[in-house]
Image (cartoon, rainbow, N blue to C red):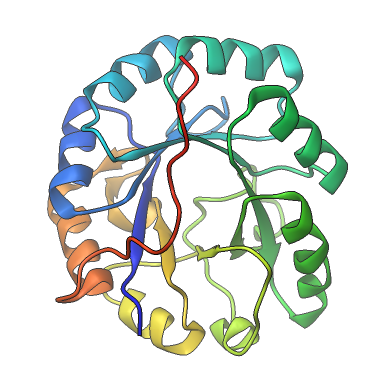
Length: 229
């Protein structure tokens, strides 16, 4: 069984970056959705990205962003990957990949088996897919809501591209989530916070320990590509 890669999303301070790197995570997520308590400006994100150690994949999370918004982010921040967390279509995913020359991870929300239908089509367009819990009714955020879904829905599924599990993960449940889904990559945001948007270094370390186990990260899963600066 291969080892696991961890993504800590919604980092906002240099201290967060250091905690993520020290924990052995493979990805650090920068949130550019203004409604989120984890939002960072492109200028602030640039400083965080420049503070990241070599090899830590810097991921920009956006929600239905237009080209002008994406242009501003990509021009300001040295990134390794774009994460699309809105209602982007496969055609829009392909357009963004071509425009920016960066790998794209597309998030899709799951609550029941019917939500799985779009995953195969999306995996044809994106470099990776992120399987998240569908936001609860009335939620204002597309992710980071601290809710999960029935992990057994994806336990025996296979897609064409690498995929990542998200939604309600915590240091206490991530090992079980990995066992039930056979996920090789996991993503957490609110599950390692002491308050909305405030990362807790101890929780980050505990999450990584629970997910990674003794084997550490898996070099077989491609993460980085040449960075456009």
